[in-house]
Length: 426
Ligand SMILES: *Cc1c(COP(=O)(O)O)cnc(C)c1O
Image (tube, rainbow, N blue to C red; front, side, top):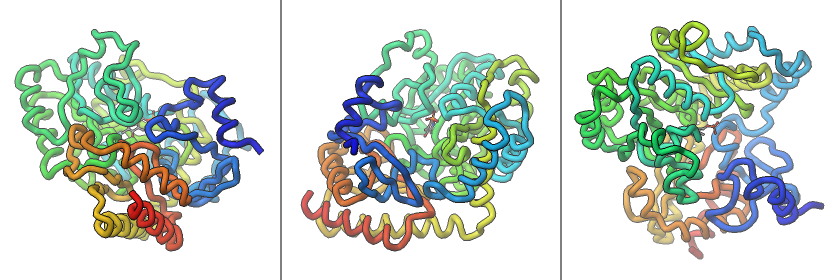
């Protein structure tokens, strides 16, 4: 049997840090990452044969749980007909129509292969459409690793504490202005001085990449008003939040309609697929209809489309889906909160729909600055304690935990029981 230790030693010889995405390393918490052999429902099994209740969910996509039979069947059936053609297929249009059901503002869209591509392309489109050079993003929001979006980014950048990324020229980084999340005044100020040059504001409507941070009341509506008045576009990056708390994403819950939307993760059903889209008059600027170029050899890949479509249909076809998912999350969050209270742990939980983060700080976390007041050493002990008890959480204080529809009563009880035992000794 290969152990996780042997596996990471071997992978470290061929991959930087032994992984193919930095967030997979246990850099912030210490120890070796689990090498996963297989997964089913809400459980993952590592190569040492240990089973864990999974709250990483492939960082968001696995809302149905792993190896959902309908999704696996859809992928298998699609694969039997060929894995990629580089030509249009009927499935792509079907998927787009299913997405429009959830996001009616996406009158036209483009399928791509990752959230990075979706956000990067939406920003290029915003610049091409408005003819303006600047974009505004929030401190700690993560929109993939495109050059102009990696400034003050969350997720792995926040976890590893990387201030600015070498390799991104100053001319490119300086085209991105950064404001704190949940700070309307700061945004107004940026618009006062640079308004006519701002192509777009890109934002996670609920920030998930510094841990979960919901918008304060009225914040998104304020951004909508400010961007509209300045003739700038508003881009909602719903790669994480799309289909997470409601079929129509965070924008629907918050009742704010952006100009462009980015989707990823759930929309691909665990396969590499993402989307950007919006009003037809803006999207018509994308090639071949317009002049803003963006392309992809594997875009709209038939296996990924099949997985996405099967996932969306399963969610949409079940009126009980979100009520049940939210109830599962209610119980987990309430159980963990009870434990925090009982053992007087200075921490609190932020939650949006079926994602949550336990922040180990006394402060209310409303932006990256307050998130950074967390004691990451305490988080690390919490993470390791939970892992020892068979609960697999994201290995960073600055990430969201994801609940799936496959977490059942027993999983919930085991998770809460583990949290209480860990808090007692924290
Ligand atoms: C995960 C994520 C991305 C990047 O998606 P990838 O598929 O990892 O490139 C972009 N934006 C948000 C909000 C995300 O959570």
